[in-house]
Length: 174
Image (cartoon, rainbow, N blue to C red; front, side, top):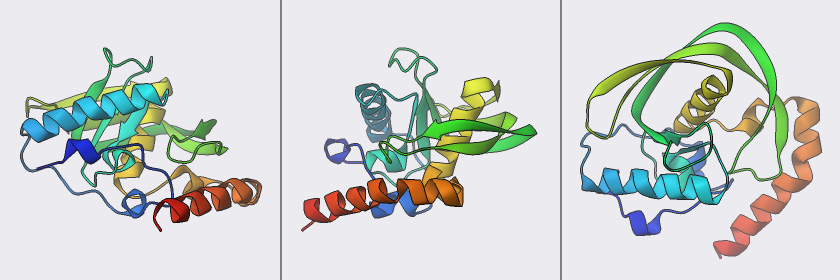
């Protein structure tokens, strides 16, 4: 059972962001409510995707919407991604690491197998922005952040922003 009232945008270095998310065993009303709350958070923060850990929940679920709208957001539960194609470098940021951007290598295509809110399994093929969203959100489910994929130079450049995020977290959790 998920307490949706406690769900909120989660920023680094909150521990749930660096832990491997757990599979969802039962798609009950609380998971339905969680998906709706995640869509709301994604839209509020002007994102195109949001993973469970980013909402403070260590479960294998994410939402994605190419246009960043709630109406077009789709829910992916227990996703398994199979990347293919070539590695492509593109600029990427993360709602959990505001203000930090970097050039990240991602595969140009992928197949994703997941469950929907109805519990039925489905498979999709993706490329373009959608393949980047899928890989980014699946990274979150495995405890990997964009900051982990930054080049050494980009990590040095982001050091001050990371320090500020850590200070903000420590001040909020005193």
